[in-house]
Length: 189
Image 1: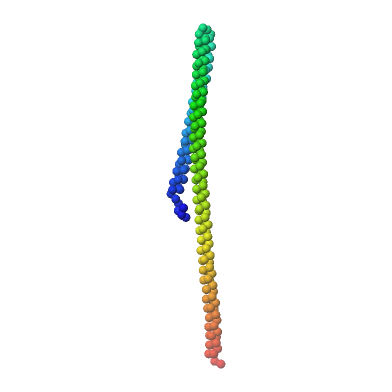
Image 2 (image 1 turned 90 degrees about the horizontal axis):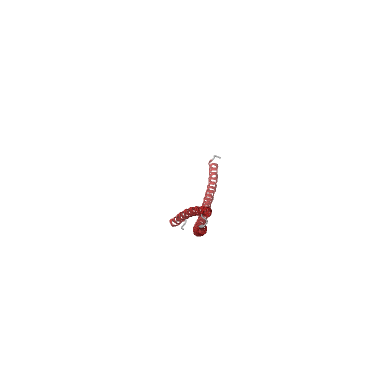
């Protein structure tokens, strides 16, 4: 960068990085909401499975009391239904687990990208700060040099003025002596 100039490209890149960071944060929040919804759905499915399982046990007890000859077929049906529910529960848990892992990975990737962007921005700001500090030091050196030159010039002017005053004083004294001698000479004896 040239001293005193501000690059539009750097500002636009920084603005873009900040916008990207905001977008990543909103994505992470959306993913977190989706994960919560999935957890709620999973809980609802598990609750339904538990309710269905409890209902199946109640039905089995009633049937055993009322219909003894059909007990074996109902028990087999219940075991099959229970196995299906357990399999459905396991399948649901696997799907949810996979989606949660994927969501976490994406969130981590976005967080890493945002952190990288922030590190890059901090590095650029540090570099710009260093450049400004060096520019300030250069300007201060130049100001001190101008002050030194002005001080030398003023000192020389002062010395010339003193020399001129000393010469005028000598001339004044010489003229005063000449005047005194002239008065002495013109005075009647």
